[in-house]
Amino acid sequence: MDPDIAQAFQKEVSCAICMNTFIEPVTLECGHSFCRPCLCLCWEETQIPARCPGCRGPCQQRNLKTNVVLRSLVAIARRASLRRFLRSEEYMCGTHRETKQMFCEVDRALLCRSCSQSQEHRAHQHHLIE
Image (cartoon, rainbow, N blue to C red; front, side):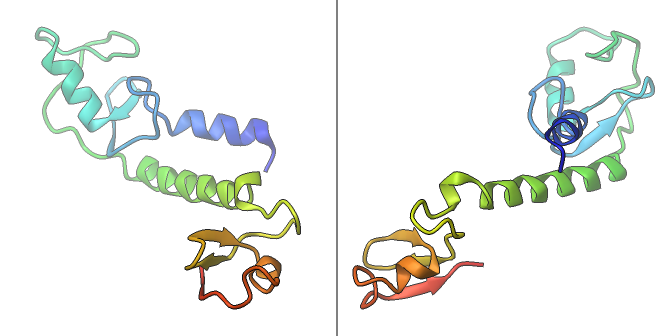
């Protein structure tokens, strides 16, 4: 995926209060979305009437509904982030340029298949990581 698109997508599924990926996203009447816990904490600290932390417009505090579409997009973003990590340098074998898919019980380390069959690790107990 194009890094600019991935970055833009990540921004759209991030809360402007905590700057992290949404947790139980809710969307206010003005269209701005926040994590439910962040919004509740923000409103606890302010006076009535509640205002949107984004545009400062007035908001109803009752009946905040989870934005299920946004929640689905957050799940997709988390899966994509995991995939990026699994393809990252820290998850790749520097010697063989293969994905580390094996866990060596003796050395308590992640190994690629080639390393797991090397002289150093061949006799060790290994587990496939999924």
